[in-house]
Structure formats: structure tokens, C-alpha cells
Amino acid sequence: MRTPQSRLRLVILLALSSVTISACAGSLARTSPAPEPTETVRTETRTVCPIEILAPLPAAVTRSAEAILAGNREGLTYAGARFAREDALEALIVDAAGSCKATTSGPPPDPG
Image (cartoon, rainbow, N blue to C red; front, top):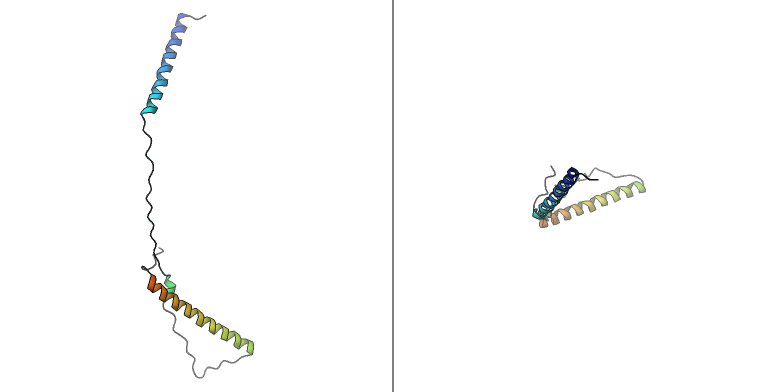
């Protein structure tokens, strides 16, 4: 059996629950959505040349009249191939430096 006091407690509890639920529902309706985050992206394309390409080449080595290259056939073939490779690499570096100077938009960025 319920007493009048227990009925009164039940009515008050129901009333408070109703007020709490409507207050929560009302607060959700009044809030506005958070603004969307924005991000600005700037892309810049620059053509730069490595410092090593633009550096001056070491002075060419000249052979004196007294210099004699002597050795067996395999050794001389190897030396000749090394000299030819050096000449080819020098030509590539000179061509690359010329292309860089013609198309570069500035010095390379400072890595530090």
C-alpha cells in the first residue's frame, strides 16, 4: 500500500524528471553547430639547381712532356677507360649547369 507521503514523493519525482528532460531537450535545440575548420594551402613550384652542379669544376690536369704512361695492356685499357669516363662526366656536369642557369628561378633554398 502506498501512503500519501509516498504518492507525493512519486509525483514530485515525476515532475522533476519531466522538467529535467525538457530542459535537456531545449538546450540541444538552442546550440548552433561548430563552424567547419578551414585550412589554407599555398603551393609554389620553383626550379632550383643543386649547388654542386653550379660549383666550378676543378682545374683540368695537364700532362707534361716528360710524363710517360707505361704498363701492360689491361692497365692502360683501364686508365684509358677512366679518362674517358672523367671526360663524359665533365661534359654532363657542364651541360647540366648550363641548363640550370637557363631555367632556374633562384638559388636553392637554405637547408638550415
